[in-house]
Image (cartoon, rainbow, N blue to C red; front, side, top):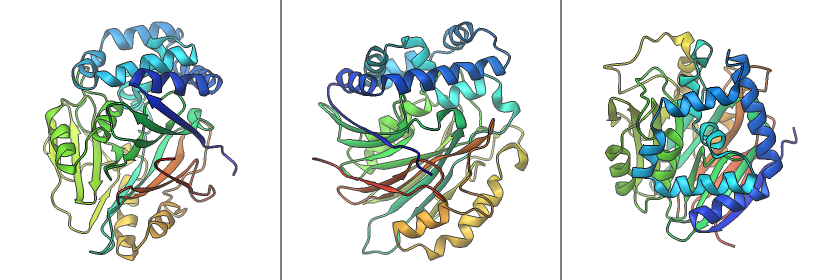
Length: 351
């Protein structure tokens, strides 16, 4: 499989970083955004522009971003200008988890994602990794942003073209991976998942990252696995607040059902998420074999459950996988597509 990985170096202010992102990938952003608009038609919204207007009018995510992560609004304005697309369309396109439940697409399977975090030994830095399972409309738009901004730590971010981020790490060794917890309460207000993820990567220490996650309101049910050379943390977040999962030692493992935040889940059955329990059991059974990033990547390449899912029309698939050794600077590797048939690419800070 030869899915391209677009790598964009963005420097300067948040607006300038966004402008560079938008200009460099203008045609790809426009094409992927158009595919995204077309999916709204299949979800019984015959006028995508009316849908976008309704979505943004009935939610207040811009207000939350303006309060907690205003630099990301500047970056989004830069992307929209650089890509020559309407800001409202780009904003909705960036609200991946929020738009998913708002659109009513939860009548089908939720986005997946499998997360593994581990301390392979006392002499080594933590490893944090995940598969990113989303819709096939984003295939071909796999992108890494290398952000060197005036007021934020240097960061490497895996995403799709035009989107501010799915997961990543910064030069201080802070890394974050995520997975959807749609069974937890969501709200039309609060900070969107992409903004929470990027807010974590704006921090300098694991303690700062923990305080940030706990201090902001959350729009969607989401699990954030956050790590640094100091350790690993697990947060199950929703509109009801944040529950930190402290019931793990060497292995931080997660799929798409809550492990700690189980007091007020929405009605949930195992079939509501794509093989969440089976994936969790598989990674739990194999976690003790992990000593290196390559070991994690091999587990994420599994085809038996499967964890690594090939593209199928109208279904979620493994858009890519990320593995990070959280040293300073970190060692980050990504695969632009299902890891069972797409090679990992090593990324570097600086230079």
